[in-house]
Structure formats: structure tokens, C-alpha cells
Length: 269
Picture 1 (cartoon, one colour):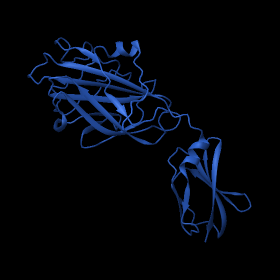
Picture 2: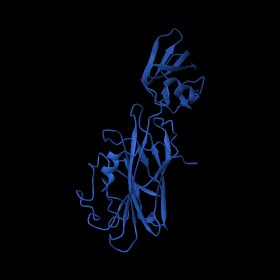
Picture 3: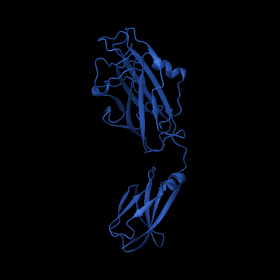
Picture 4: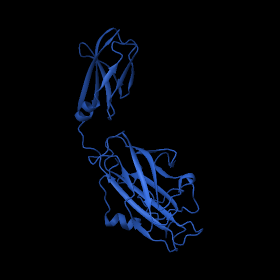
């Protein structure tokens, strides 16, 4: 079941969105980009951005459209989540949208994944509708994936705008829906992340490679120590390690995240 996370609709954000318009009628295959009203869009509005609905009878409405399976505790860095965008208005048959995710400085954070339902733009920083998937009867929803950014990214803000069109061939009577969703980075300690992972290494014993499984957190690096405690290997975290050059014996693999670590012994044949 999809859960709505913490939503933050401050007056400032609402004012930013008040004139946001996506040029959908001329772009049935997806927004051209830059029309969510986010900070990186420089507050793109119907008046300042040449939106084709600037002088029409369209109205701007705040509507809860964004939902996800991100828990209330926040996102885990690097984890993939499901996001659902749903626009609804009685009598409407054509729908379109654009969504982006940013930090407080307006930097794109996280990555949207392409599916059969949406188009991905700006190297994964934005998602929008497809021409083959923009029709509905009173409502339309799109489901896609979003991979959370790296550890330390902080709170992330989703900005979305949708056009609900009556399909009469012009801009008259069309309406814009807006939404924003703010989610925190999970306040999970490094120890919790490592323990949660239930880390395993295999094969053990091994002669060439060592593979780490079960860990989905954001480790800083891996290190290997010999039986006397001397450091013999240190690299940025990777799930596969080449240990062919090590002499036969007992070693200890340490996965480090912040100030904590988890150690697993292994035998080099």
C-alpha cells in the first residue's frame, strides 16, 4: 500500500507555484522541461515563461498528487522507491505532468527510472508523461521508480505540476494542478544500516574474488587486514573485491560507514 509521506505546502511554495503551467497541449508526448516551478526552474510561471495558458481561463489548484512507498522515517540513501503521480478532475480526458526532485539549493537529487508509463529527462532528474499514456476519464495516474541520492543529501523536495485538459483543441477551460512533497533523509545510524544489511561474503574460502551481499547502505570504504592486524587492502566500497594477489591465510574484511564498521573473516586459499 502506497503511503503519503510528510507534505509541506508552505505559503512561500504555494506562491511560487501559483502561476506554474506545463505546455501540454503542444507537447502531448511530455513536458519540454522546466515547468515544475521548482528552484532550478527559476520559478517558471505562465507570465514569465511564455506558457500558452498565461491568458486563458485556466485555474491553478493545489492538489495532493504525489504519493510513494517512502516511509515516514525518510529515505535510505541509494534505495529505490515507487512513486505514483495522480491527477484528477471530473470531466477531463487529457492529462500531462512533470515532476522533479531537488535539495534546498535547487540541485537535482535522486534519479527517476524509465518505465512504460513515463519519459525520463535531464539525465534522470525529471519524469513526464508519454503521448501513449495521457488519456483518462476524470483521472490519470503514472507509476515510476525513484532512487534516493547518496548519504548526506539531506531533505529532498518533490515538485510537480499537471495539466488537466478538456481536449477541446485550445487552452480554454484547462486547469493546472500543483503539488510538492518534502521527505527527510532517514536518521538511521551507520551501525543500524550495517546491521540491517545482514552482510555476507562469499565464496569463503576463496582464491580470486570476494563478493559482498546483503548490504544496501552507503558505506565509505572497505579494508582488509591480515591475521596480525596489518592493513593490506583499502578501496572505496565495492561489492566485488579482487584478492587474488593475497597470500594464503586468514584475513578480515572491514566495511566502514562513518565512524562505525562491520568486520567479516575469510580465508584466502
